[in-house]
Length: 360
Image 1 (spheres, rainbow, N blue to C red):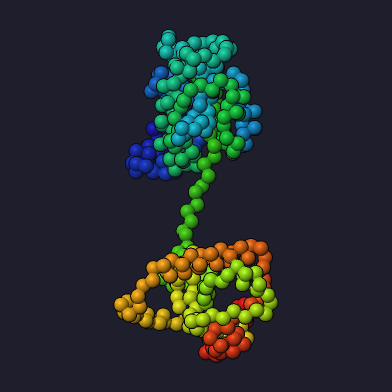
Image 2 (cartoon, one colour):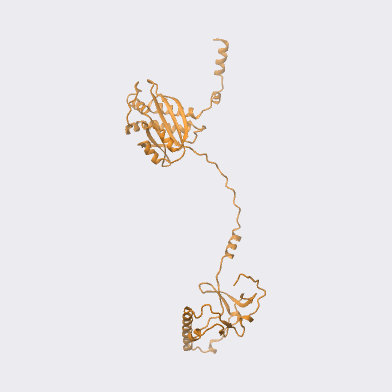
């Protein structure tokens, strides 16, 4: 041994641990080789050599076209959905069968036959071990996360059956060519799964803080409100109602400009108002309701009969007004109203009320 050789050996022996691994980083191809080699040796004692690992990305149709009919397809599931397949050719299935039954790989090619349920059952430990070792082996490579959460399921009957179930998306195909080490026997393992899309985390921009009190108040204030201004309601005879014509004058005894009431659509009183005009249009102004004038009941004897007669008369006249209105006698016919001598053209002018020309 020369001095130069001794120096070289000494350098190899004194090299810090991990330095060689740093100079030869783990690739996805090397990681897949290690995962399959370890799985075959640990489950059935099969010693094999992965000669090559090929990767490609393609669509569903091209992926299905790359799978031959002699492959045994085993479904790969993620979150209760069939997402891909792992395929073993006849040579790989035969090698597993020979190791399980005779403890060695025969020095003759495997017989070409259709895969059976027994083939799938004997290959299950190898497939499960390979899928279990795969995520750890490819950590830090381009295949990191590609097979996470994947488990093997039942056998898929054919390539056509797989095409009817798998989603139409981009797929990554990992194809391993294996040397069984006996009589030049070559095997193949193919794994197909969808391409994992990189998830880009987006930071949501904070929304402007809304003033809910002001927003709610604006919404309520801008909500439409339909109110009816009622000046006076009184009974008239049917003959009087039918005799109303354009220009007729109705006297409203006991009614003043302060007698206006605002009614809601259901007929309930909302507020008290005063009748007037602004800009040539009739107008009302909200007023405080006048105090009730109470008198002693003893001073005015109660006439039950008169009260019932009055009520009956008012009901009859109300029916008459409704009848006249349905007959068209009162529709769209302006009627002059006299309130204690105050005609519409002499109504109080409410100059202090802002005029809105859109109000009719």
